[in-house]
Amino acid sequence: MGSIPEPNYESNTKNTKPVGIRIVECTKKSNISFKSHQAIVLIVTFLAYTSYHASRKTTSIIKSALDPITPEQTLESGPFLQRSNVLTWLLGTGWAPFNGSNGTALLGDLDLAFLFVYAIGMFFSGHIGDRMNLRVFLTIGMIGTGVFTSLFGVGYWLNIHVFYYYLIVQMIAGLFQSTGWPSVVAVVGNWFGKSKRGLIMGIWNAHTSVGNIAGSLTASYFLKYGWGWSMVVPGLMITVVGIIVFMFLPVDPESVGVDKDEDEPELFKKESTEPLLSSVSDTEKNSPVGFLEAWRIPGVAPFAFCLFFAKLVAYTFLYWLPFYISHTAINGEFLSNEAAGNLSTLFDVGGVVGGILAGHISDRLNARAITAASFTYCAIPALYLYRSYGHLSMPVNIALMLVIGMFVNGPYALITTAVSADLGTHKSLKGNSKALATVTAIIDGTGSIGAAIGPVLTGYISTQGWGAVFNMLMVSAFVAGLFLTKLVVAEVAAKCQDSQRSSNVNACGVGLIEEV
Image (cartoon, rainbow, N blue to C red; front, side, top):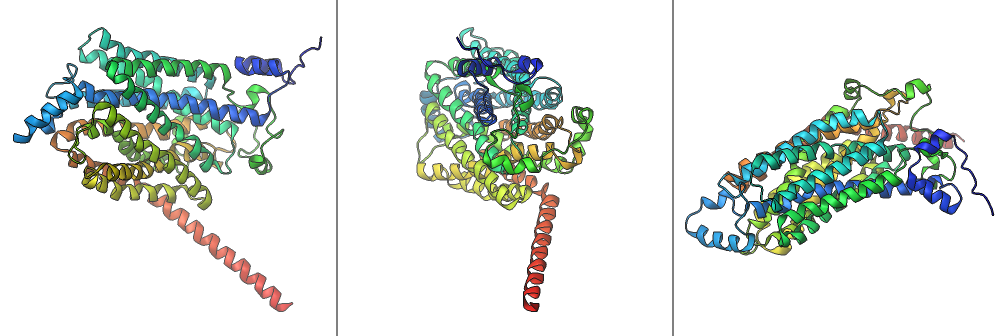
């Protein structure tokens, strides 16, 4: 009876290797290769953040069940009575206290509470994530998110109508949600180098839109059984995925004892000759970067403030698009809660395309700021067209929603993935590998403050009409692009210098040939 070969790494590495990985290696009686570990990292982190966004999206779907009629419509006179009857038949009578005259404002307050705590928690999560096992940290965050997402839905069966119950549950859920993004970006950054990072992370970042779509479809489907199920089912889903993360996620090559140069995929072999992080002493390499020091890394502040306004726009759509659709007649007809939720997923389909496209373009041009700014400015006319003509017909609404999703989510995806990973391994850090989660948390945490402000402003501004909301979104997109102006100018100047240098080299070559 043959014995199972012992993997060639130290006992402390065995202890940090995930249980699921050890089981797989024992079953196949050999170590898992570096390439296979990379595949596991991409799949597990993709599932992890997909479930985060799926559980986050549910509140936007149940809004129209909690508050069926908007204050904007109550201001109308003659046509309102007929429209009100149609909406009541389609959407139901609502759920106190959200079905009162200040219903949208209360829903906006829930968004603000969730996202404000999420944003503050993000800064601490990055700091903690750089100092503890990211697999354990991520698992705690996912299970906690699942528990408190489910508790929100439990209010349906317990017949809870106290606003502060839902407010406190949302705040704690936001705190647990903040563990996700810095952790998954840091893990992926540990396994993948800088070459073609924009394309790889653009594809990988589809988890945001896939999660939104999955959350929308799941919540919309279960809404007919009662809005509580629309919260509990996604809560159970993220809990299950959290267990998978604990079982299978390898944090970095060192934790599982694999050599980065062994069996490395062809795509990354070129990088091994030019390491992403320069060689430094172990003390410097393992010393976490301070919060203020991370802010001083070139490019962090402009991209962070750009993301503030970019996420303000993106999260307004995340939390209010199904509500807006269900309360806006398309070709003279209103949609049900389920139909509005399903239609809103097309925004995220466009977001998948936008994230991949922005990553690919930024890789080809080697210009992250130019790409992000271009997408942001293109979002402005797209927003105007959707508000002005989206109600004309279903095909027009679908086409414009796809375009908006592409331009709104493109720069958001690029900044939160490839840009964050680039800056987290910036040359000014002199090889320090303990900055990635902190930098990611600073950029996305700043963006999340904007994400908190956008939905709550929408809750109040929408009472004056949705036209005012779209004006706010267009101004925000413009300001987001302005924050990248200095970086765009620097990238354009660098391109001009490279072009001039290339022309001089070619001219010298031609001169030598003529002399010969």
